[in-house]
Length: 396
Ligand code: PLP
Image 1: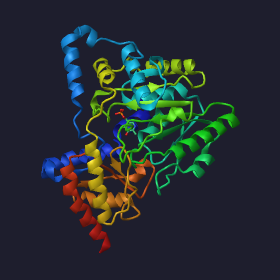
Image 2: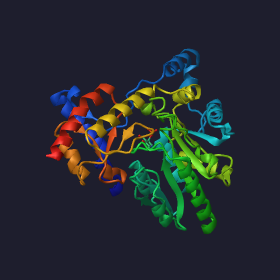
Image 3: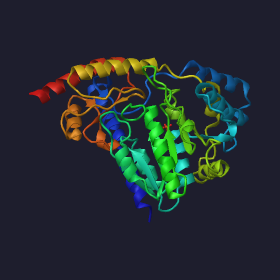
């Protein structure tokens, strides 16, 4: 007898992966250059030079058995201090090393925080559109209820009417993600303030803290000079789940952190629960070499200007072709409306042109499609006539 739930999850790939694998198969037949694959959020920009420099210098100068050895479960001290210094200098915060727990990317950060918090009967609120794995982790890693909030498609901020309705005595936490995958929306200061006020009020009403889990792998990828509100400044019971997957273009190396700010209620016990969760989930420690890379490169990013350029070309092209879309202010995703109500049918039609898009229902927002534009600019330029051709088909 094996777990039916796990077998089910193992047999069914995520829709995004399914489309990506389809693209790989098609590429073998028609050639990679003829596939317009916008399915996966895999950065197309090389990591900054400091990544290779740091790797080379540690390989040359550190004793190999130390470099590749276990680190403390929480992460190397100087690396955690570097995480604190980087945030403090950029966001005017006052963190110190003891608030950080190094992890195997944002996925691990989120699972660890869920595990640290979850008690039987707890509910976790997730505003749409959302990263699909949240639901999977809430339901399978911690066996809790995932309460989904419908999207606010006019601007992809939070639908507060629905949000207020969903708060209950069982609410343990809310997961937010800004800049957002899949919409590219950046939550405004007003949104964060309103969210903080509602959580404060609900925590008082129900007599226990309702935590905010801020999933921030796209924190550095913002456009138009936007200033991202740093969430712990607005709501003390906030966890930051961070990853260097996107900012440093290192998704395969699996490095990130959980931040438990000092201001959080019972922060020492919460931090201990994070350590316990990391242990019980079997992470042992975050990758040793890439902790060092993160420590030395925390203030650097890959060349984000390429995503900005891609956004502009894609957005202008789609609007010109008659699509309607909220202009993304960050991350590297666009989330236009499909040209028919059933966005799955729309994606199927696009597939006939080897244009690979992800249906919005996977992100809790049917009627839209996700375009991951972290691709070569040239791919976007060549795909725009295809988007136009499809739009013309619908006009006919
Ligand atoms: N959260 C969001 C919103 C993401 O888009 C991703 C990856 O694409 C993750 C978490 C997982 O990130 P990581 O690769 O660091 O585990």
